Image (cartoon, rainbow, N blue to C red):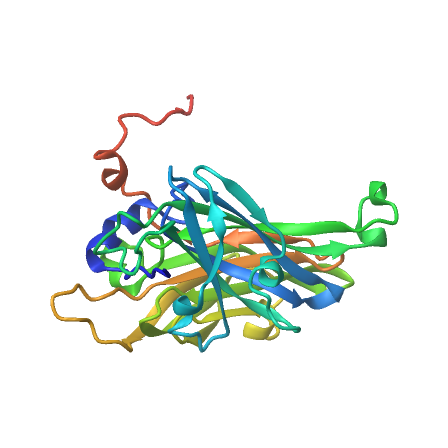
Amino acid sequence: MVIFRRMVVSAFFCLTASAAWASNFRAADLVYMPAAARAAGSGGSFFKTDVTISNLSTDPVIVSVVLVEGPNGNATAPASAVPIPVLAPGERREIVDILQSVLNVSPGNHVGQLLFFACRQGGNCTDCDANSADCKLIAVQGRIYTEGTGASCPAAAGSNTCTFGQLFVGIPWYNFISSTSSTQGLDKAFIAGIRQIGTAGVSGFRSNIGVANASNEFNTTIRIQLFSNTGQLVGTQSINLGPLGHSQQNVGTLFPGFTGGGYVIVDQTSSTQITTTPAGQTPPVPGFFAYGSVVDNLSNDPTTLEAVYTDDLSFACVYGSKPVKRPVRKGS
């Protein structure tokens, strides 16, 4: 059965504080890959997506996956998740071009976020918050890449094609950003390394910013503020996302006329719940993901830019207390 975890207040604060994007906490029964593509890009590129799914349990596990495209999203998308043949205990499985080979997307351009749901074979995973015994841990690694030919490839490639790609790790359900965690300083994230220089297919670099609604129970508005590397505000854009909605846009589209380097700060300015919380249950929390990428205009080689918090790790959530000493001390 398809599972969909409600993101509840009680779990959110500590887990999010202890599991920022830069951490290694990746295991969950619900994993998001906030960017996936099978689509043409600028400069003659065409991007595809491969994933590797790891079954971290000692049980056979069925993983179901769904793609949600566009800013309007789809509140019922989890119910249409496609099951992948069962993974044996401890199995790692690579899936090439998952949007085509598993999801069989229609011809055309497809860009969105992937959700992976993991359930013990034969288990009941309709509500993993109330009954987690059958909801098993998986980890997901993804690669989005384009193929190159000729001069864009190393000389050793000869007449063969080569690929240029970027890492997108699967993000566990508890690792989203939310306006509800402002008192912890975890309501916003920044993405550094923006480069918008030159022309696609000619020279320089271009950058994209992506945002994804993590909830199927909220409409939300995400604010993107672009700053120069010296901290000057260049501009502000707001993006409205429906349930599980996704948007990726070029920096030149979001902020016309901007050239050079900079960074963005991303936060959630409003959210509206579109469902009714059943009596006796904890209300869900609105959350989102954000990411960036910078692409070489000549080779179309992309690099992922992670969203990171502006606060440090809450050690008490992970270790019970802060480590006594740092592992390295700077000498005098």
